[in-house]
Image 1 (tube, one colour):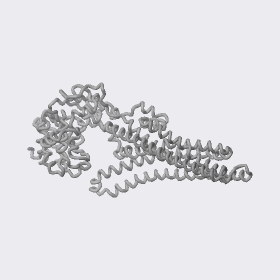
Image 2: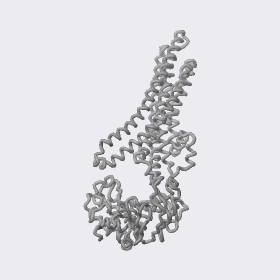
Image 3: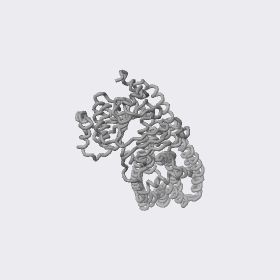
Image 4: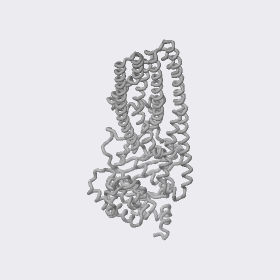
Length: 603
């Protein structure tokens, strides 16, 4: 079978077309609809917060009006009893306003925290379902930014943004009503400034939206660079790469700084403009109302209350601009989060799927093509049958495609062309979770997680009894070093297993695989990073582990595969030779050459 297309682009995951169409409209409207889905479960709390906020928005506008009443109706008339009553009433309004602020803040914070908790859980759950190819093209630092900084921006918006904006708008309306009742002419002067302010705000919105997008993009790059270099600090130091890494970090950091400075520039320009416009409004009101007072056409109380109303009027507008800052950051973050949540996931099990998958006959790969990128094929028209109970080995030079076969069989990567079946069922039709219940993999690079050693050993099933864990460790030969660790099975494993040797981590991986109890066992260079003594322990454990299981061994060391039922020799994505150890040596082909490289004496 020839190369099907010349490139490997035919199998790249594509974003769901329906989701794309939904996003072609207003992005803000789409984001709001998605966010509402997270708020709906708390509609009772939302209703309470809205009612309290809207009802409480009348308290602020009442204060200047009560001041006017105190001046014109009581101070001017020397009415001390009436003045005392108005003073008590004003104090009560201020107290109620404080209680309203406390209640609305408390409730909105609860709503925000609950909604953000669910968003974080959805993001993490979705990340666990994404295919490995997604993680190949997305740096860890970028994903960390999504789950921390971006989600936290949503928290700020949900807890102190949306509902408070409703309160500010309601307060503005009450202020306009109160000003109109006092004097419609002065009200027109104040409202005359509003179109200019709206124009400034809309211009600011367009500029700052782009700036916030740049900030988030550069923050993701900064986190990616930092995470990558911290994780690889030993390599950085071994190659004296510190200065070069520092210079590159400085460049990435400078890009992030400059993006933030651009947002600061817009805000530093915007706020003075708002202050200037409010001062102009206040000046015009004082000038016009003062002239009317001199003509006895207006009272001092109205003038003083109107000056207070001006500052009250522009304060919600400033609050709205502050909230707009929060909203812009949150909308940018929301867009990035929901794009992540739209990434296509692996096929999941459904009610229509058949019962638990079992392996009884044969794994078959027929004319399989695969590439990690769009240009270079790693597997080329590969065909291979693995019968139940068979122990096969796949050997070959680095880059020949050995591990790629395992990645395909494990469902980690989709193949471009050809067919892969288990007992006649196409692999693409088997949910990834069902497939991986069949397969246990021991990799060369063992990943351990922070926690106890027991938690790492019982990774597949935390409920496994301690007796089974201890027995599995004894079979593998790991019990000796585990018993010497501080705390034994309760030993606290550090990140990436720091403090444990490569051999110890490899033995832990074998115990983990044994407890998983798979029908198909895969050993991918499982002994390449251990010493001779540990290798002997592992070989003995491997023999026990393979009993009654179909086994696939990937190896560079040919000494570890000599007892395999069949050995496949890979070369540039193609199986060049197949046979037993002795048969392949007799052919004097690629396997023979590899053997001589490792055993120059021919033994």
